[in-house]
Image (cartoon, rainbow over all chains, first blue to last red; front, side, top):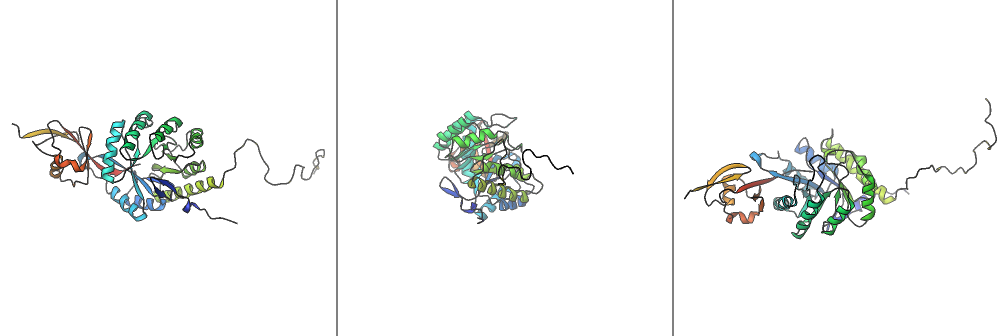
Length: 279
Length: 70
């Protein structure tokens, strides 16, 4: 009997909060605030990332944050402020404290960049910042590489979860190192793992979920697409499908064929020594 | 005694009256207290501390606002 996907009841928890959606959405780069609002709705997300920046020349954000707040209130979702642009633990800690005050949440997506070309997170500064922020009462969501030991250190200092990259931010390459991600899932079976960065297509998100990850964060792939609202919906479906596939249990890949139609090992019409009919 | 001090506001030089607090600076700039977060000399200054946080000559004041982000 066909069973409808049960993703609606397949919740996960962070900081005692039960989340139904496994798609996290970034709010940057949308063509208009209204498009962002519709994309949030179409994605069915319950966590939307936001940022902070210096108020140079009183430049506003053209109403994007107000739209995010309104959309989240509408669908009971939460803000996840980031520390984008920070290059040291000290900077990240200070920015996180400002984010907590401005956004009135203890949740923080911790980012500490270690390389300007790849925007690769700095594992040393990241762990140090996480240690301080956990002590200060933050619920830390660290954006990190797919290095197993770094992820373990982040969990050891009290991070609620880890967010390894699929590929460099905005690269749209998908999963650059599936082996490393599979290793993370296998070695950290009880940790909440969210793939963040590098996701370029709904199929990438589905693959992440099929590997047993707990959620996916996407921004550029949705915001910069030809139709962000439609793409947000596509990601919603891909994440749900991937999750359901993982729950169903994927068959293992192998290097040889296995016949699916049970005709037995004999030739269908010809015996092993018969020659084909000459026609 | 000089009645003004020089501070850097978001990296730009600015003269303010001696004894100006962070809260007064924001009010003079017409910022709602909840609209921005503040840091002085690279350290976060909580909203609740701005009223008694007196600025000094050479202080660097940074203001941060919410933006969209990934």
